[in-house]
Length: 260
Image 1 (tube, one colour):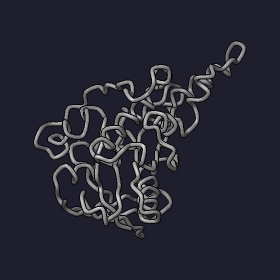
Image 2 (cartoon, rainbow, N blue to C red):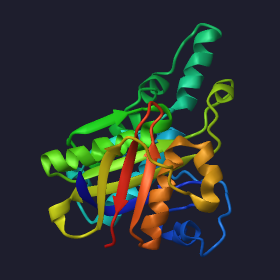
Image 3 (cartoon, rainbow, N blue to C red):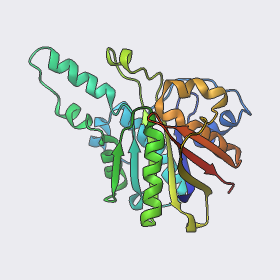
Image 4 (cartoon, helix red, strand yellow):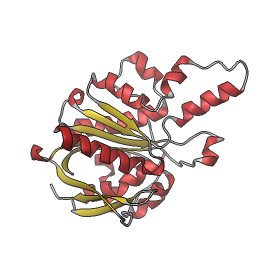
């Protein structure tokens, strides 16, 4: 399956946006894992903005950057949001509430707990009624979500915003599913005939070696969404690359990145 990458978004420790992070991604500047600032989504109405969780703000920051960079109207993008943990902080808070006192759950917490919360807030912010998919695949959420997004581009000939994101879980969940720091990456994918953008081919293979994240390997080890980093490093360098993303149940997703 072939498409093009028309816009990129990024937010993680020491990676405060795509353009600001290119030097760290290419190795031209040292990577320093500084704390992540999670800005409230400016496109949301004030009431909805106040209800957003840290996980939603993380996802929408990367998604908004990618959409803006693509130059395409945000409302016209189909979306695929992929997350291993979903909104683990909200789920943890609900579990705490259920196990203490009268078990009352905040309505805001409840509607933020669903796996498509980030996609829902994006739809409100963008004014979009386009098709949207939210999925989780444990450590394979990034390659699974990317396959889903590319398939939509190829099958329907539409632009698709893909966002992979994960944030740390609270205790005691963190002890069973360690996620060390927030990370989100987003791509706007367009049909190959679009002409502009970086060519990307995606295929399934029987096996492949994991792509290198270089000095950022510790970030990949600590966050499933950061498996996007080998692709982001190649994009930042402007180099053609073949990148393997092994899957937990066998096989691999292989990415072939061309040059703009």
